[in-house]
Image (cartoon, rainbow, N blue to C red; front, side, top):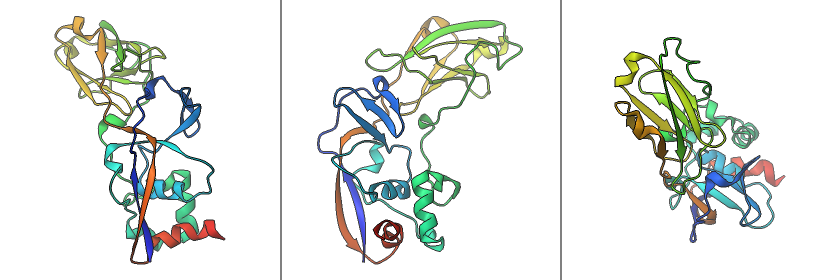
Length: 232
């Protein structure tokens, strides 16, 4: 028999993810003096592989809401791979190279690497707009994507959430799309650039906090294959 895992966070943390300091596995929270592991973009297989590692003390994690309060699912297709390779791939985050394993996530969790100087992506740019992207608390969001809808003309916000973007005359009648990891996508028309000076992005519903694991038995399968290399 193998074990399935269900994750729950009884008391969600209300600290702002955007204000935390980037760290190797997520971000460091000054309020609780620990690293919050970012599980929000992991597949179920990656989460399971992370959890079976030896660990000390409680772990604080950040999850997308759909990851919680349900059994974590690891597709049977993984069983055709050598068990040691599956575990290593999942731990290193390489399981995304297996299309049937990786889960899809909303566009709001995709941040495109774009240039930060205006007009760099559009030689025909004749107009300049400036603005700032902030969270619900008014904190600037670094690395947010500002993109002209339907084009590749866009920029990433700077460390304080500000941006400037060059537009062609034809693009002035279009819309800007604002996206950032963990936040809902915002779309604004370019008809009135005055409204674009400050754009507030709402949290996409990701949940942070100390999580608990519920287990129950199901037919024998991948659980042993994933965990056996760590039990030797």
